[in-house]
Image 1 (cartoon, helix red, strand yellow):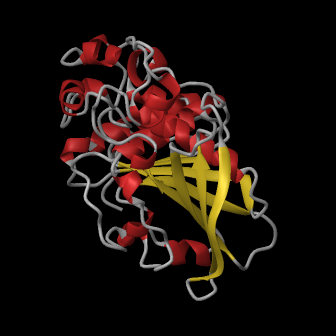
Image 2 (cartoon, helix red, strand yellow; image 1 turned 45 degrees about the vertical axis):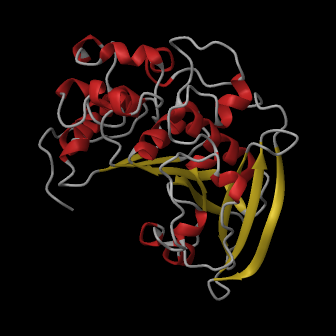
Image 3 (spheres, one colour; image 1 turned 180 degrees about the vertical axis):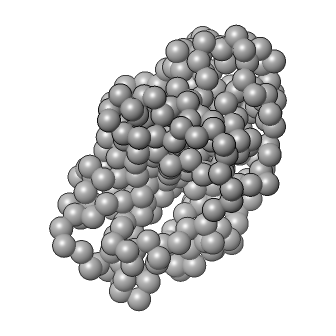
Length: 319
């Protein structure tokens, strides 16, 4: 139902014509020797016109393969850190981004990417800019990975949207991580914030290789119960972001009670793997209470696997 009525049907793993990897840069001296930095181009076509650049940091002190966090970023790899060696997006790549995108300075979003803290605890981190895969604006799905895989094929109500495209690309990054000897690909957590929190949930639901799913402030069409119609609604999100979901989803705007599912079932699809849903207490647009109720709603499915979920309908306090 979620494929046909919400996110759209993603293509097969090998749908892109020529997926291959190119090492762009590597150094074992990142963060004063704490980590190895590796920047890899994951190309989706032979001519490398469609690609993402994956930035990886792997702790140098480790005994065997390490677990990893994998998640897309909003502002570019360079904006996640003050590391001067992280590559800037090329002019050609920037030309494909959303019209409102502006190049942020290095480390502009670094406070959200605690690389050194994570590395010091023995985990690797990998990220890419989501615009690399599917620029976040509506042009009729001619740009990005849709343009490559779908070409001029006519779309229908179940055709995949941008969130499905970003989730598909996370799985392609996991394909690559499976080739990296320093990474334990069976212990990769997929993470995301806001629209990318919705993406991480869908990636975790559709790709059981992800060992842990983390969503922050995913809100409407993410973790929040739709029937509450609190904060952002199905009608509002489809009006503001008509490219995120499949066209069939638009029929439920203002008619959430007619949906044959609700978002607790998206959470339940991740079972029995752990899922962590984070909310911001003042982000009423994302409906933190509705996000919490999805965890309660999914608990019965986790129970089938022998795990005790969250069943208390009294929303806990901050922290």
